[in-house]
Amino acid sequence: MRPALCLLVLVTGLRAPARAEEDLALLARRAQQASVGIVCRGPRGGYFGTGTIIRADGVVLTSSTVLPPGATEIRVTLSDGRMVPAALLAVDTEKECALAQIDDGPLPYLPLRLDDDGRVGQIVLSLGNAYGVAGGEGRVSVGAGILSGRYVLGETRGEATYKGPVLETDAPLNPGSDGGALLDTSGAVIGVLSLNYSPLRFLGTAVPVRLLKEFIEAAAGAVPAASGAARDAIPQQVLDAWARRITAIEVERTGDAVMRRGGFLPQGPDVLRRRQPEAFARPKGCVSGVCIDREGAILTSWYNVAGTVTRIRARDAEGAWVECALVASGEVDDIALLRAEGGVWEAADLADRGAIEPGGAVFALGRSPDPASLTVTGGIVSASFRNNERFFQHDTAANFGNSGGALVDRAGRFLGVAAYVGHLWPEWSLNSGIGFGVRPERIAEALPALRDGENLLAWSELPYLGVRSRGGEQATGELTVDIQPGSAAAKAGIAAGDAIVGIAGTQVGSWREVIAAINRYRAGDKIAVVVLRNGERKLIPVTLAARPEGI
Image (cartoon, rainbow, N blue to C red):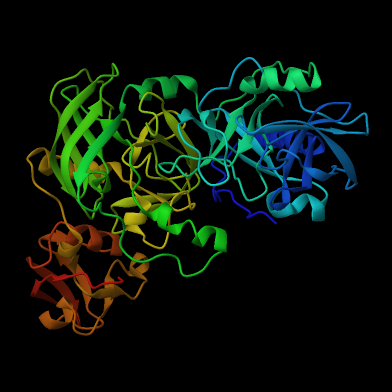
């Protein structure tokens, strides 16, 4: 059995309104009827994957990683559960595609989009015989997502044999999905799912069917072509406007790059564990940033410029590469400010903010791996406040390439800057469904210091008081606390059962307000904490400690 090799993408990247969901459900059922599971014997033993019926007489389009040259004992599982034999028509390993013929019919089929590759930002479906599901369930699995990028892959990885222009998607791909269809909402196949990928993105890719037209027609004759428009997940005018504000950044550094805090995942499928070093190591290539003024001030992720950096360049709004200087950065906030030395820049309006509420749409914009091409992945807000109120959480595909780029809502309103998830939460890796964005008000608060060249907090400077809320403050208006033994609060004399009402001159009555007040300081700073104890107000001087590991 060949190794089951493909990327596991754990985000759907899409939350559609009710009617659109109904339309997608109908399309998914129709696509399943024309999608097949495939097994065969090849030069390295057993192979399995996915195929698409592209003509009613049983012509099946798939990948050469599913049907390699010389494949025998080809068996195809149809959507009605029948397993039927098929004959190999042709294979092109350079284009990573293959054709087979089923002697059965007429069969449901899907037309091909032979005239264009679709638009970045449009809704797509992925069809896959994930883990051989067709053999057990009778039908392939379906995932929804976005056509998240278009770029050229210059080398092959793993079992992939194709390099060249690809369509990227944040729709789910799993072992066995290769050879399946990437489908637009008109019901047209726009790509054949591939095993190749960009290490900067770690998302699934597909070979555009437009590039397979000559191969298909030479081996099988004419096939039905698609017509009809496809729907977008985010308006094209929004992407067009942001395309001039999102910049690609090239960083040169010496020595080992900063990778991540913590170790690899202790558990998981072997295919994922083998890929952990690659998923957690910083690859070479450009990353993303957001221009915030016409003089070339650029926000990006701290992780993108960490380490011993020798040179930084950014791509301006006209496509020219411009030298940049690092002005200041903040490790805890995962944010950095660059200043371009010239160039033409178009600024994002950071004041035009969208609401960050659970369930709201989020799109992550970047420029990687191709600096000339915008990428977009989609999801929803998972939590409004995380990590000491500095961040919000989302389930959008977050990776090396789009870290430092903008997070926006469907209307294009600014939601924050995409953080590198492995830096903030070591137990999660790329595209895991756990992503973070630096909140816009935190950016606004930090910008004056960054512009003045003042670095923000490092992990070693993160302050810690050592109190825990007992809850109930919403009912009482007071924050009654328990105390961690040996903490700064305990050493200063704050007692369990005290109600904290003020910190450093700021009145507080909720846990969120306490966190916000503490976050204005560094470990080692002295502050005054006001508590109520048995109805009496007490002012207690406290020297803030560093946050312990693991908290």
